Each structure stands twice: as C-alpha cells, then as structure tokens.
Length: 115
Length: 113
Image (cartoon, rainbow over all chains, first blue to last red; front, side, top):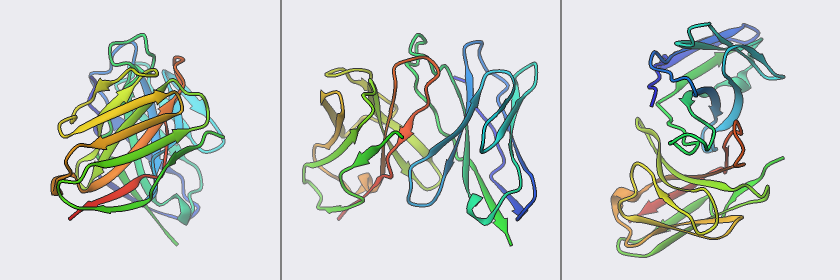
C-alpha cells in the first residue's frame, strides 16, 4: 500500500489560495488519490478524488502530474471555516483489488486560516 | 445526501463492561467500516464488512468484534472494555461500486473508566 507524506501543518490568511502537496512515490497502477477534510469532533468529509491530470469540483481542485508520485489539493480563496485537518489517501478504492476499498489515513495536514 | 448515524456522541463505561456502538446508514451501502482515532495516530481501521453477515479484520481488531445482521446497521462490540480503548470511534459506509468514497458519521467519543 502506498504511503503518503504531507506537511504536518500550514497557515494561511482569508482570501488566499492554499495548496497542500502530498507525496506518494509508491503509488500503484490501480490506486486513486482521495482527499478528506476533518473538523474537530466530526467525522472526515470527502472533498475530492482523482486518478490523473486535474479534477475540479465546487470545493477544490486536485492536480496530479503524469508520474502520479505526488498530488496537490488546491483550495481557492480560503475562509476561516476552512480551518481543519486535511488527509491525503492513496489506495485501490475498487473492490476488485485485494484491499477491498480500504483506506489508510495518515496524520493529515492541519490547515489554520487566519483573519 | 448520505447519512451515517452513530447512536451516541459521548459514552462513558467502566472497565470490564461489554460495550455496543451502533452505526446506521441510509443509502443502502454494501460496505461499512469501523475506525478509531487517537491523537498523533490518525485513523486506524478496526473491522470492515463488505456485505451482510460478512466481516474482515482491519489493522487493530484485538479486543473488538462486529455484527452485521442487516445491511444498514454495523455494530462494534467491545467484549470487555479496557482503559486503552478510550478513543473516538468513527463509522463509515460506501457503495460497492468502484470509485465511490467513504462517508463518515460524526463519531462516538468513548471513555472507559
């Protein structure tokens, strides 16, 4: 299973764009990249998921280079409410793989947004 | 919207008690998961189930068991609670189709005294 490395913490100010990079050098062919957000005393919330190139939804963008050994979560114009822990996960999310869709959560990145 | 409901937000039990944590999802998901979350350790998978009456051990199954009698409900059982099982417990579910994300409940903060 691919191990991920992401910064322990990041700081930003309201209105700025925030980019959180995750390294996953051992990513396998069938692995997808998934990002979750977690607020204190709540369960993780799915943000975005991708396999290659760029994925965008109403919340964030996910940039994945051709070699897929890293990925970058981009949050446009953050606000105070974006202060949370962000997790990068890599895994075979289909049930066809031996992992049966299991996800492995690391320690995540604590993003703090200041006024 | 997917709803994963955990029966209690906070629970206090005593050492040696048998503890039941309940999780219900309303989206007819085949797969369900139990994690625990501890400071500095992230989320760790205890057990998961890919269908009714099916279960698989996760990374830290010792001291726990699970039950999946109905598709919408996945129960975590602490057979004889110990203080080192004090933690935040999170339940998740997902559809059994490739590419679907896991959806989490808001957790049960369990204290064993």
